[in-house]
Length: 201
Image 1 (cartoon, rainbow, N blue to C red):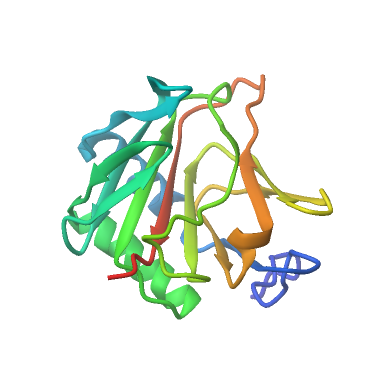
Image 2 (image 1 turned 90 degrees about the horizontal axis):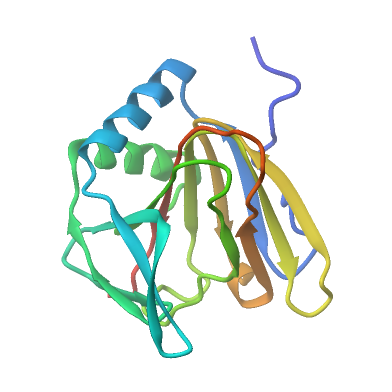
């Protein structure tokens, strides 16, 4: 039976200058829970690093970087070298590719321990990524608010990312829009986010 209240992945959530599709949950709750537990245990999580005003800092949020090859990915003044895919990551990549019709060669994973950890306004427009390429963002764990802000008009668009859900960003979205995961004081549990990407190789 079709869920009449399910998100329509054909709808563009942005009013202009970009393309964002929300596919909603793309797996069952038990399946999403199994993947979440496996990633929490098996991924070699490390604190993220950034260089701010010449100082290197580490975040409470943890990250990992994977790819078809040992790609180097530089953002916030720090460089990561991709690890080889795990079996679970390949399964999740296949789900993202089947739903979006895109092909991805890399993935940046983020581990948020609770609601106090988030991500500031930014865009994923690094030169090593395919220009206007697709990014598929898969969420596991605690539901979190996710927001977009137009760089020129400051118009904002927000939605809630559900457990086991997929968000797709493509076209000129990174050129014209910022996005963020705002922190919250709600007592939330852990969340793992996987952003499947297209390195320009």
